[in-house]
Image (cartoon, rainbow, N blue to C red; front, side, top):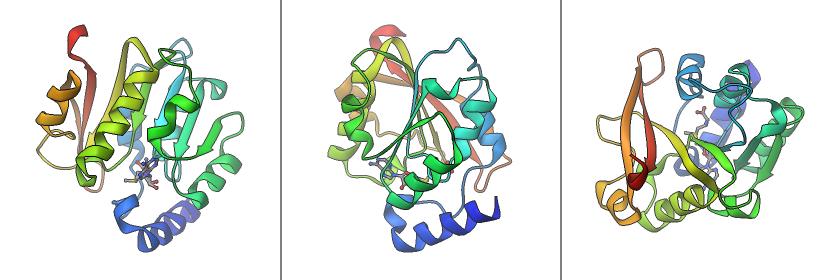
Length: 188
Ligand SMILES: C[S@@+](CC[C@H](N)C(=O)[O-])C[C@H]1O[C@@H](n2cnc3c(N)ncnc32)[C@H](O)[C@@H]1O
């Protein structure tokens, strides 16, 4: 675990805008992001797993490793994830490329640790489009954010026909975080 913090800090110093957090999420946030998941959930894709803190929560909730795919941009994080999580599929890639790794309409949930609020609109749009291409009917994306605002600007949500619902607030995280569930507005 100390190794995770050192690796995270090193990556933050090397690529602060890509990592956009000074430490990994807490186990409490990981539990909240995986709430309700289990052995029957089906395929789950995680965007921006970093050192794998949310990954641990998803696996602890009962999602089998073979149902979990991780998409991480950083080569060092991707190498670490592949050695840490046996049976889980790891791709070193941008989340925008998700449809190259999962068939359209096949995924039950996308769990995102991406810093969407600090990304330009076209990148956020590409990532959300990728997520909702692979998500099946009724599927959802889970995203946490640190501020009081939703994790995605309303103009983007409206343009893509999406709807964000507030879920748990996790105080035991640095900084405290809010979980949001994002769905197709037509399915609310
Ligand atoms: C705030 S950190 C979150 C790490 C981890 N999920 C956690 O909660 O502790 C953001 C992570 O997203 C990754 N990342 C940033 N942009 C990405 C992209 N477009 N596609 C995939 N991963 C990306 C970073 O390399 C970093 O690992």
